[in-house]
Image (cartoon, rainbow, N blue to C red; front, side, top):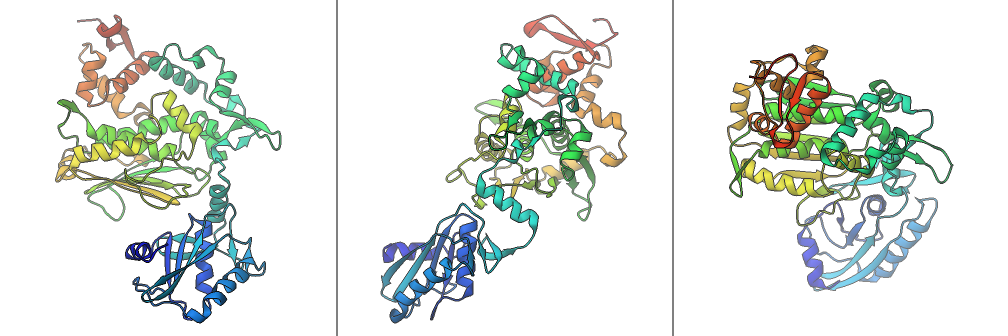
Length: 480
């Protein structure tokens, strides 16, 4: 590294992968705490002979070799480090003195310094003592996907048969020739990788992904007792909430409920994209809810949240990321947290290809409010999308006063807002097409069609005609 390159690094300040140390003599304990935290996180460089403000002080030139030897001795000593992290040192001669760069790569193990695990958070070395946090570090290091965890005592009977048939219907709408449609339930689960086999132990059975996607609420509660998603509105009562929805059911129903909750409570301004009117709100809500459910570490007890405030909508969920920091279009590298769940959502039309969500959030946030979203990854993934100026107040003023989720009757929660609006449209005995429903609901035509066909399957609606001429009416009413 040249002095000019060093100065470029120093100008960026300390952060998740960069640390400055004065080091007047031999390295002290805080240097090795940083070595440990870098090895446990994403790696980084420690610059010895630099103060906290990035000014070069230099190390004692007579101690350069002793400093390098001391670092090697301490990191290789089993009484201080377990296991020993890798590192490299480099001397950089500058006009203000010698700077020693200690480069520490991210390692494959969880490292301890003096029997303490350190992790890097922003520009600090943090002691990790919580067993759940340490377990999460092991999973991150070993690149294991917890969604593939096998539950040999969970059978097909523990999955919801009605939900499996609903999934088939969703797939059929997207692709009538989809290969899964020709398979029985057991083979479809295998094709979707929801039935797995551990090649090390020989254990086989349904996976955590299968339980979360298609399991009954009772089985989900047994397998993931801490699994829950909270959706809150905080506009008037900022200490608690104005409205709340708590979801602890399968991911498919969770998607519908969370999406309807967010869409109903966020403004939907008139937005043009390439001369065509689009609902930026609906696209943003779809991406936020998808990310909240798909890219989430379900073995972590952290409760995922979607919070709608006066300034915008926020989400946060447990993550398992090697990278920590701001996610931008220039430097983000999409990494699937749950590739099996993500693939299943893609097959049923609830998600697109990996990485499209970030691009859509940046694109439609600018159309929606004229401002960029804020996305931050780490042990907790956080997203914030601003709302148009004054939009939240307008939405709050027109939002119906509804009881919190704990007070709502079960039929209201199961029916869903979109289905209820469709039934209201047809209450006068008329008919409606999927395109008309899409325009009046402010949702995509695919979403409208999905709800209409769902109501037909349950016998609430009757479909008449075919293709684009198909129309829907309430069962028991005649055509006008």
